Amino acid sequence: MIDLILDGLSWGLLMLGSGFVVVGGIGALRLPSFYTRMHAASLTDTMGTILILAGIILQAGLSLAAIKLFAILIFLLLTGPTATYALANAALLSGVKPELDCDESEEPLKK
Amino acid sequence: MIIFFAVFLLTLLVITAIAIVRTENLFVAVMLTSIFSLLMAANFFILDAADVALTEAAIGAGVTTVIFLSALSLTAERERSQTTAKWLTIGVVSVTALVLMYATFDKPLLGDPNAPVHQHVAPWYLENTPILIDIPNVVTAVLSSFRGYDTLGEVFVVFAACIGVLFLLSAGNGIKAEDETPKSQGLRHHLIPKVVGRLLVPFIVLFGLYVQFHGEYGPGGGFQAGAIIATAFILHALLEGERAALAAMPRAALLGMAVAGAMLYGMVGVVCIALGGNFLDYSVLHSNPVIGQQIGIIVIEAGVGITVCGALLSIFHAFTSRRGLN
Image (cartoon, rainbow over all chains, first blue to last red; front, side, top):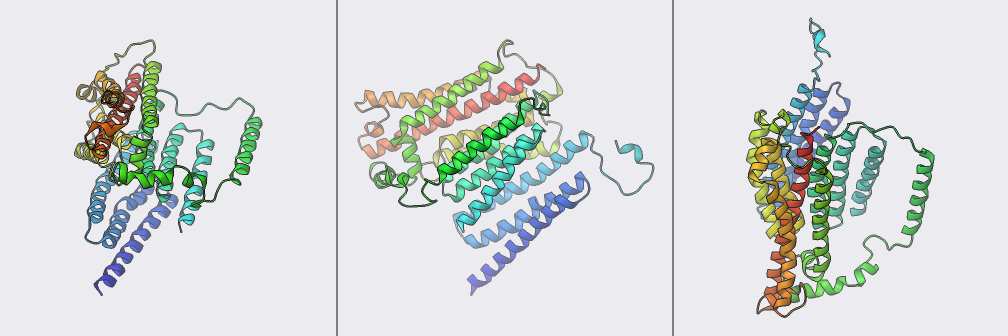
């Protein structure tokens, strides 16, 4: 019985995580500007990773594999957002301005 | 199921390869090469070649990308427009591809147990590894004991490559580009990468040591471990800047590592001769031949790891120190 519940939970997490990855992928292709695209892609790094790895940990059960997966999860949670930050920072420093919706006297900002 | 994944990954590989050829932006090409290596690693992994997958991921997708980027910072970002006859190139490539495709018809199918490669020496290795060496990972046994000569050759190839790159890059102007440009400062002013990177460096080294000494029991060994530890030092160099990295690990020490690892490997062979065995026949290293084999494997794997780490870091620093000159 408990196995069935764990299996169901794990599959639910895996499907949800895959959903986030797919949404992140679609967003990275469809969103208009660099920063919004990166925002979509960073969804894959965080929510996608957490949910999918949690699903696999439930599949692994109480074993060494689960601990290793947990270590991988921590590693990815540290590096993913850092990489996104570094990318955004590099873009900003090299002069890519965020596209703003409000058309005040911000025009000179656009290159 | 495996076939399905393999076909999917191979399709992605072909798409990536075409994209690499078509792009004129070299920076994009480097990133795509990294993706290509990662896909290749996944491909090796589903074919059950975990050791090779680990090497490909660590060296192909990791260290090589950084070295390519360092090389790219010495040159222009765009490819020069082609001047040679395009149709001739396409013709030669197409004919070669057709010949290769024709040749694959003679190959045994994927996973065919009657394929010659599974019938030649592989059964003997599988049968005798538990008896002669008694370690679970047959790949490590084959790599470092049964085929110890080949691996010795590979280590010297890595060493020679390192020496070659150093000669090419330091030709004409000595190695004294310790400059004060902002580039040599690294990412010291970026708080988040600095904090996370400093946190990760010791754990990456720890993981590298795990891969090094776990090679007898699972996927891993000197090549992978050397690359992973080199990655940690490269991350340190990127964070703290060239000067701090070279202060922690001077060029002479790195080159010394590349030499010492290869020497260590060779010396094990010489010690084997001195103790009355053949070159690289580790059985004589201990009264119990099985334990002798295990000692030999651990020592030569350490030699491999030291050489790979030293060589990769020497090459990396050779590129980054050139940057200050231009």
